[in-house]
Length: 252
Ligand code: SF4
Ligand code: SF4
Image 1: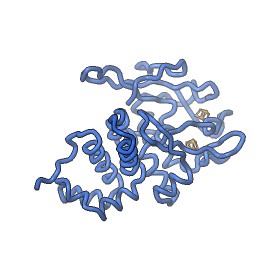
Image 2: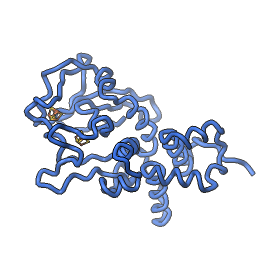
Image 3: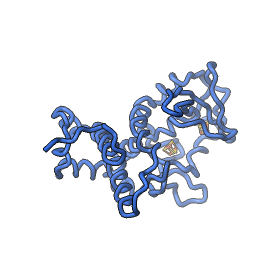
Image 4: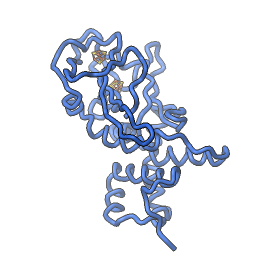
């Protein structure tokens, strides 16, 4: 959840919700799947790499470029094709070929989530806004949506839930430390968020788990379920990078 960007394309949503439809018969079909600057979240990468039958490493190498993202943390940017139109590698004439596993940003459009308040430790109010791209002809037609019905229809809830657990990491800048320590911190961040297959191997093969009090049920769950492993990775980074009390170290 981020502040609403200061851009005329972004409009705060009122209680009336919005009308929208996107389907192969709109004149602009597929127009939005090109020339994108789309930073992927860890959960986007997890869904896409499994969809494509690739390891995290293979997916990152083949389909992304690692760039400084929010607060300078390394994040994978989806690589567009090397064509004049710079189309998304997953678009076809029939639409998105990874539709059931498309990134959260693709699901969400034209709805955005923002937050108001939260300064000086105050509480934050969640709010929604619309993004109106000039070329998009999906407005003023089709069903009427509230943010909740749109999110449910697009399968966004699971994405939002997991992405919200990532926010406490990505919304804080790295600590100011000498360059070798900064590099190490960035590597740890990328490993436990995006390179989940490698992180899983480290969890299984190193003594990392022995250094924390992790209930056996949680260990079992995260060794069987990549989403649970990802959540552990977020906690491990919160503890290791920011000193959060997300994990309890073993004593002695
Ligand atoms: S992942 Fe699918 S919906 Fe998203 S830009 Fe690519 S083709 Fe379009
Ligand atoms: S531009 Fe809008 S209506 Fe057209 S395909 Fe994209 S989301 Fe759908």
